[in-house]
Structures are given as structure tokens and as C-alpha cells.
Length: 370
Image (cartoon, rainbow, N blue to C red; front, side):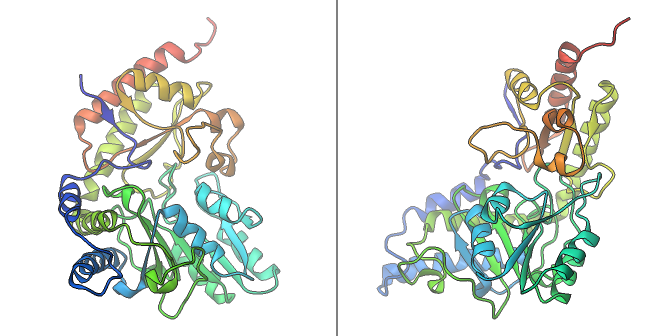
């Protein structure tokens, strides 16, 4: 029986159209910084990719700065404006939290939504210019954050505003202007593109201090010869994500069916953040007293791939800091798995997950004494 992949939030499978574009790009010869004909041809491929990524974010191509990953883009956003005090939500991805370990953290409520009143207090109490970072869609729960409201609040206090939109791209409409953000992070491999390519979208007139220095690439904002094949793949994935955005409701229907059937079959199980607006592909399920790592391994043996929270910790599974920020106890935070659907998910994948998860729960959940 074929295996089922339900871990798109960790990394989406490469789309066939993206792979075809990358294979074609492998025949390109030359450095995009070279002025001869070979170099100019490669440069055109890079700039075409930039235009597609810009369209996905609703900006001009010149506002897209290519990076080696979403993590690098987050680091550039948070560390590229020295002298500013950093404020982030407590539910951010590890790449944001680790980039600013001394940042002030804004709590979330029990439904997984960042507390804007608390953000306002932190902005008002501090001295000097600030930079606020708030993700658009949480990578573990899928809960959509009040980014536009937070950005307006930040700007009212003279702060810059960064939004990690890695998990929202291709699932929600994106617009730098409508979000009110100064900086947006994107990543190719979350939307069916290749791993190792990301972008920081920057408001006009804003210049982060370069973290990687050397050559003059990316207008001297990020040195290093461009990963042309990866960027071509990113551009193709961005174009497809924008074209396929109207079909995102299909995933929400699949996810809702998955949750309805799974929770009905397993008493005591919960879907975290379900009372809040969420992106349609993500479900964070808690099976009390069964460690998330145990669930992941049991499902893997049944041919179903999911994850226990974020997949960016060298394979280590630890209690979810996101659920802890939602005031859940350690047992709950340790008993969650993330099911994330994507472009290749279908009703059969949902059926396989529900069957495997309910069978596992019957084996592992402690039954009350008679």
C-alpha cells in the first residue's frame, strides 16, 4: 500500500511543473552577475522568478530580496535593523524566537490568537524604536493572527513590522500593503517549490543591514552567487500558488472532514485552535496522555506521515511552545500532532489517516477503570 504524506507544513512535495522548470534551468550556463550573453540569459531567469514571487506578495519585483531560506529571511528581518528593541509573539516559529532570544514576548489566548492589548502595552512602556514580528498563520495550529491590526498598532508607536508569512503563502491572499507590513518572509518549499530558497519582501525605502557580505548580489543586501535553479523553482511555485489560490477551500473541506471524523471516533481528543480562524490545511490534534512522538511513530508504521509540531529542530520532539503559550499543560503540549494537507492531498489520504489514528488511539489510550 502506498504511503500518505500529510506533513506539508514541514515541506511540501515538489510540484511536477516546478520540477520541469528546474530541470530546464539546469541547462543554463553562466553567473547571473556576468555581463556577457550567457550571464544575461541567467539573469533574466532570476528576474523572471523575482517577478513571480513579487506577484504572490503583491509588490514590485525590486522589493523581493532572495535568501537561502525562510529562516535566513527571518534572521535578516530581525537582525537587520540594529538598535531597535524586538517584540515578537510567544507562538512564533523557532527561527524568529532564536533570532531574537532577548525579545519581549507577547502572549496568546487559549484560542491561539496573539493578545493585541498586551502588544500595545509593551509598545507603550518601552523606550526607543521597536520592531514587531508576528506570523500570519501559525505553523502548528494554523490559527490566523491579527496581522493588519498589529501592524497598525506598531506603526502608531513608530515601530517597524515584520510578518512571517511562510505558512500563509498559497493558502491566504498576500499583500504587503493590505497587511500593513514593512517586511514579509516567504519560503519556496512550503508551496511546492525547492528547499533552500526563501525571500524577504521589503517595503520601498527600507534597507536592512546585510548579514552576509561579500559580492554585490541582491543590491548588496545579501552576498553570494544566486541559486539559479532553486530560484527558478521558487518562481514557478509562486506562480502556481497564486493561480491555485481560489482552490484553497478544497483543503479546508478535507481538513474539516478529517477533524470531524477523527474526533468523533476518539473520545477526549481535541483540535487546538479550532475556535479561531485557521488556514484550511492545518490541524493540530491532541490525544491526551499519548506523547506526540509516539503518535508520529505509530502513524509512520501505518504508512501515514505527520509531525509533532515544527520540523525545524533536528528531528527532536519537545513539548509545543505554541500550546504552552496557549496556557495548555505539559501533558497536552506533549501530546499534540500536526496534520497538514497540501496540493497532493485527497479524500483517500483523509480516510487513511482517520483509520490509522483511531486504531492507534484504541491501542494506546488508557481506558478508565471499570
